[in-house]
Amino acid sequence: MKWGDFLRLMQREFFVYAIPSTSKPGVRLVESPFKLKDGKSIYVVPDDRADIISPKNINAVLERFELREKFSEAYNRFFKLTPPGELPFPER
Image (cartoon, rainbow, N blue to C red; front, side, top):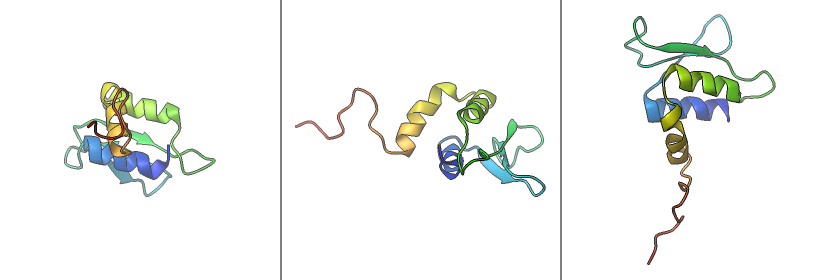
């Protein structure tokens, strides 16, 4: 998954915000910019080879924020994909 798409999806769908690091590559994902001290957070970096985030890092983020069950639906909504079992066009 592209790094920028992942960060936008997390913010738009789950209100998880990216705070850039000034000293190293990557970002700290936080529940809310107003909960930096007491909220959940995780530091993630893009893959070295390209502007993508690895499946391993995606899984770590989903575990940290307890979003595993909700991610698939949010992913489909974010990318405007048809959910399984639904037609891509309205029935007549």
